[in-house]
Image (cartoon, rainbow, N blue to C red):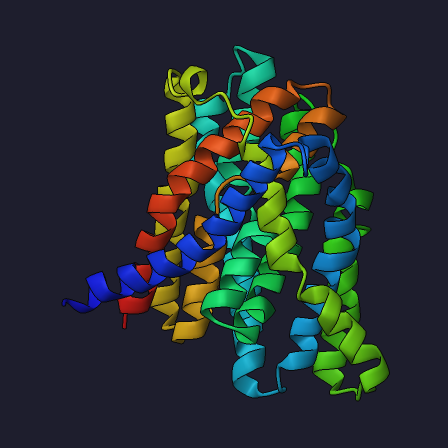
Length: 312
């Protein structure tokens, strides 16, 4: 079997494992064991406790080395690149918001990916601790861009909110983990083990929540929109292609390349719904857009992962 097809098959298997948990979440929502409102209540737990623990744990589990430090720097740069690419590619299409209730949401969804709830679990499954380590830098850039440019887009091009760009869970967890990594500070098992235990909940809970959101998606009405396919092409194909080109130019090692491609190829962020709610947009539509992009990513993410694995 050609190496590309072998890599694609292996990547598809890993994605399928996570989507089986998504299916469990969808089934649980339909049976009213884990209704969508319960999933939404878990969002803060995931955002403010579990994902920060996963980020901090990634710094505790990676030994300091010049290569790891270089990879972290490349991760920051590529995180900024993938968001800048999304902004540049989406602006010509969504510059004029003819329908504010939907166009603001699509504009946001075309740029901001599910780095924490989708890319992080996949990186953990495919690359291990190093994948989470590199994805953490992308999450930091996501937080900075989302709470500045993302707020600007969703609010109808009003002011940036610099305070939220700095004081958020992703940035603060990096502020804890990064000095520990750089200064090689010893962390006692009394602290390390609880952080590791909570971090292990990140993948299954995120996927169960995702399934609960997807179970109520109105696919038929969404698939009639041309703009949703334009936004999907930007998020799922063009942004990953731009990041892949940059990684090949930089000759990034395989674990770093795979982790960053996962971050770039992730479907739209669940925060699309949160930001829509904050600015009075149609949250039902936002959830459906995230659902459509997530469904399409079942095909596009294994393709991108296979490309990342095959590239030399």
